[in-house]
Length: 540
Ligand SMILES: Cc1cc2nc3c(=O)[nH]c(=O)nc-3n(C[C@H](O)[C@H](O)[C@H](O)COP(=O)(O)OP(=O)(O)OC[C@H]3O[C@@H](n4cnc5c(N)ncnc54)[C@H](O)[C@@H]3O)c2cc1C
Image 1 (cartoon, rainbow, N blue to C red):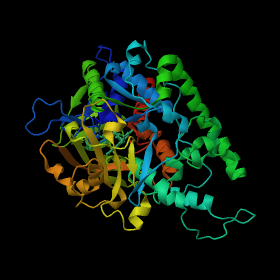
Image 2: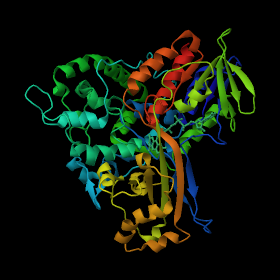
Image 3: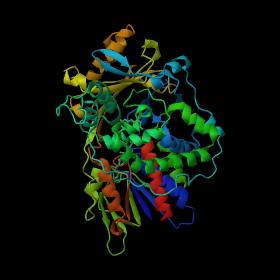
Image 4: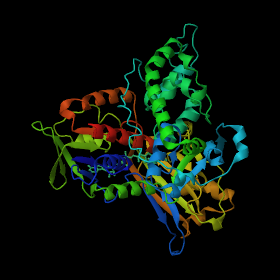
């Protein structure tokens, strides 16, 4: 019997792979998923909203949380396989790498958009194509696709540092012996204007907090560059392809030894996935930038939950777990829901934020669960009917660098804006934008009024004035996502290594953990981790 706590993408994916492997109508196994909310999906939440009084309208598809899945790398392949086995191919929207919205990413600074460098040739091939080839693929049983050993966090002999610290040290003027000319070198412009904006977009956090090793391993471990052949819109040193692994001399070679092993494992898995998925779909993944669904990303979490139910997984919604206790005498785990109801399981998997898990573990000591802070983001969606003819630049959107706040030019803590109708076209006919505020600048006073001020330039460019925002057919929604993204601070990977070791101890055997707190915040990371953990449980 297995309890999965949390029905976000991580918990659901985990339950699905467990169910596919264990529930064979023989009543030998039991899987129960708990969530404190009255719905499944966690941060994944898509709604089709109709303007007031327009019941016949198709409505605008709004995402409160994540809006697209990156297709890159092993994570993209694993997600693709999940989508295909759920038979969701007909619902998928893929955006090719050649679409302008895929490669045009901008930074807004000093009132102007600055387009980040990208491959010039791709400018000539902008197009958008929905994906058909999912339906054609014949996958068969590929449950064991990722069942190639356990993934161990690797202990590095080199100290971690912040993203800001790494680049300041790397780019600062040096003496002939490699020592810094000035120990207090100023933060380089590339961090203030570029890196800070990028990490506002991914982690809603500041580069002075984030761990280089956790969030930019490809640059931190330059050895990985040996295996990269991807094109990137980023200049060196952010472009993995262009980062010479020997950059740091002997230190780089040492890193190469440690990381070759890890990268070797990734290559092996990649080859395995390609063998299972077939050439055609692998090519589609390689040619696509991002993926979503006609009715938003919740299509994925809903479909996973449906298959789980069909296979006999039990769901307990509105069930907040308030304690987990491992019984010494029989090695089983007892979970207690709010209201005092207790149930005993052989295995309990938590997909909760690690800090929340810490509060539930009564006698069990797992290290570092509360080490990382998390960030709060205010998400404002706008959907403007086509009749207003609002033109957005053909781009994914723009990010705001830290420099703006330092110069007093970002009073609302604006992190960036996604041009949804450009980034994921084909969900409806509305012009859509999502603005994100908060993160390191969070203050509760942020609201839709602020967003409408930020929206103003787009309206003006299209010959409209701000007063149209009050029109009832313009859809606006504000949601505050409290503690929604963990901030991987310096030492995160080392701490994960120690947590991994602690979980392997016999007394902790009934417990496992997964979710955004541990091995990556993207949806791909969540799926990959949830699936691996399920495979380990099935094998055990
Ligand atoms: C605004 C925003 C935008 C994002 N954009 C993207 C994007 O475009 N692409 C991308 O790849 N990633 C994106 N992410 C990241 C990604 O969405 C998350 O990392 C991912 O959804 C986390 O899923 P999870 O299942 O690990 O956690 P969650 O979704 O947090 O699920 C945890 C579940 O546990 C439940 N729970 C909590 N406490 C208890 C308890 N005591 N008892 C029972 N249940 C409990 C919660 O109700 C929740 O359903 C974004 C995140 C946010 C917040």
